[in-house]
Amino acid sequence: MLTNEEFDRRHVWHPYASITRPLPCYAVSGAQGCEIHLQSGERLIDGMSSWWAAVHGYNHPALNRAVAEQLEKMSHVMFGGLTHEPAIELCRRLVGIAPKGLECVFLADSGSVAVEVAMKMALQYWQGRGEPRRRFLSLAKGYHGDTFGAMSVSDPTSSMHSLYRGFLPDGLFVDGMDIPFDGEWREEAIAPFAETMARHHRELAAVVLEPIVQGAGGMRFYHPEYLRQIRRLCDDYGVLLIADEIATGFGRSGRLFACEYAEISPDILCLGKALTGGYMTLSAVMTRRSVAETISDGQAGCLMHGPTFMGNPLACAVACASLNLLTTGEWRIQVAEIEAQLKRELAPLASCEFVEQVRVLGAIGVVEMKRPVSLAKIQRFFVEQSVWIRPFGRLIYLMPPYVISPKQLTCLTQAVSKAVTDYHLYCHA
View 1 (cartoon, rainbow, N blue to C red):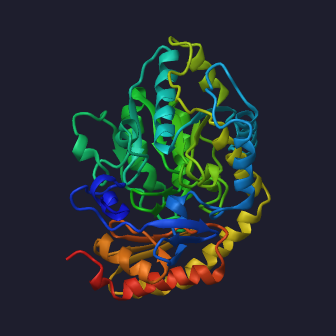
View 2 (cartoon, rainbow, N blue to C red):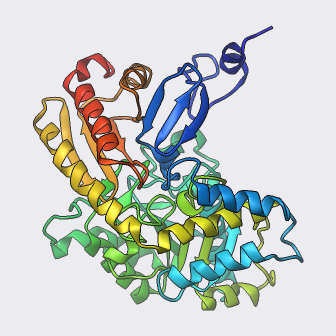
């Protein structure tokens, strides 16, 4: 009989991993606060927030309590023809804190599905107006998920496009978002985007972008004026704007929503990841009433999407509890302190011969290397340093839980510093 480790390696397919050449996997026995506990006894300080979702840390008493209390009532009930208090309360909370004008909420399963729903909304909106539009305009270096619609608006070079050529819709992309977040704005910088909009606006259902922070496509931070100008261009040409805040929403960038840096509201907003504090999968797609009504009065008479687990009561209950923690406002202080410490402790790495650039915004710290990382090697090194950091490509980055202590954060930055110093041991030849 195979041991658990042997069975896992032979039969369990992990994210972005080979079944024939699996990467090392470390068995977890539990998690508490900002620590992941391995079955082998090590305790790892979490620098990833479990792919950016566990912003309150693990085993949080308020979130545990919300799940336990809801479990006593019902774990799930279909959302078609039925409703319940956790879903209503969650939607009420979201409408209360979202960017201005977003008042209709569709609850979905995951971040990728949220993007699919947002794209369906845009397509059905234009059908409802009697002028079908089928194309989307996105930013190069963006990432919006792994499902087909989401892939079609993700970067065509660095994402998975080449593997599915011929199956994905033909999207439009604009490069040149090269002014960093704190750089000096130049009016000519928006010209490539403006020119593309001028040529194609009559066929565009929507612009799809990640506000201010591009996540898995490259961890880039761009100037807020880009976003402000894109909103203006969408208004001028009558094109919908979809903001994918799945990674940035709920404080990660230093603002509750990254759209706030540009003082704009999108027409459709996608939320996920930190929505439930990392406890359960859930996403939300919010839109303006004018969009929702146009869809509802259109050919189908409804939005053609309905997940089996839509509005799951357990997920909605823990999401409400997570929003309770965020509405205390403590996250603002926590994220500001994390940002200051990341800048202070990562900045010296910019002078290292192996480093291309160091950048920090909110509770996000990125060290971009000149050569790609060997994930198996560097992952083993980080575990030996008692931290959990999972780089990708040329990027070693930190997105810790907001509740991390300064001492724990220093352990993370010191581990990154050691890895960068000896990067020749951990990079691909």
